[in-house]
Amino acid sequence: MARKKKTRMKSGDFLLVILVLGLVVFGVIMVFSASYYSSISETGDPYAYLKDNIKWAILGGFVMLVASLLDYHVYNRLAPFLLLISIVLLLMLFTPLGVTRNNATRWIGVGSFTLMPGEVAKICAILFVAWFLSKDPKRIRSFFRGVLPLLLLCGVYFILIIKQPNLSTAITICAIIFGMMFVAGLNIFYLIDIGFLGGMGITALVFTDEDGYWMKRITSFIDPFEDPLDTGWQVIQSLLALGSGGLFGVGLGKSIQKTLYLPEPQNDFIFSIIGEELGFIGCLVLIICYIVLIWRGCHIALNAPDMFGTLIASGITIMLAVQVILNIAVVTSSMPPTGITLPFISYGGNALMLFMGSFGILLNISRHSAT
Image 1 (tube, helix red, strand yellow):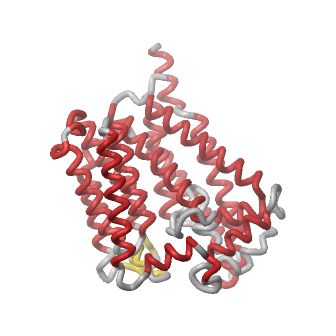
Image 2 (image 1 turned 90 degrees about the vertical axis):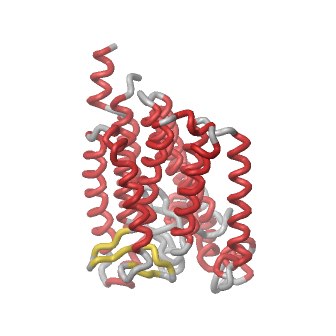
């Protein structure tokens, strides 16, 4: 038995590594395919997005390697400090360092370097909640000692992120925290009540928005063809791309919608280009890869040597699952546009590096598992 545990420490979860690296390589290929014409239009260089994405993928691979070798118990001491850093970074968005793109201030910029505090906040929230709940496992049964502090944390994150505005990241972080609370033993009725209150809060946000920003998002989702040249344009082009792909797709690199019809196809709507070029079969294979990756995450969480490891693994797996569901739902017009990236696939250096780093932590937890 001791020999088996030692081998596990050396190898970790091999399937998880293969899936992550496979998705990253596939993402680099698809970002190049999807961004070719946008890159020419914006920079004059058809390989600009490709070169940038390869750079971040290599950096992400290095971060993943380091995280996989670093004992995850070190985060037990760093968790409160990391939480503070994430909140400070979110507050910095409202300073002159905040960078605004497409009417949203989601980046901190210093020279040519930019950072998305919302992406940093996800992993910091996971580590803090895991530390908070594992330090005293019984506190989740107490509303005032366990549930209320985490609800207040959700509120702080939600307010700071929704101001950017970035509803998708706010929803993702809250879903991660609620999911981890459930794994830790939160009463199911508490979870239902929290979900109801959260839904009421989002509804209030939509109907009290003086600028009508969120209402436009909702109405464009309900009937994108009502305003096909403005609020419904991106979703309509996405549906056209998916419909054009059919069963087997039009072929890699042969998308029509990426030729400046679908705005920024390499980002949130890259799944549309995958559907157009690789068809339903390509989308199905990609979804199966995500399902297997989620399964491996659940397996690691169930076999983690302690509650701290279980909660971290659960949080990372929940983060992956929520983002995959939200992204595909948006692209297929099943929910309002939210601006959520497709993990490991969409263009975006911060998101790619932090996701790979998160799965490095997950890999390290698997290396400590006895099974």
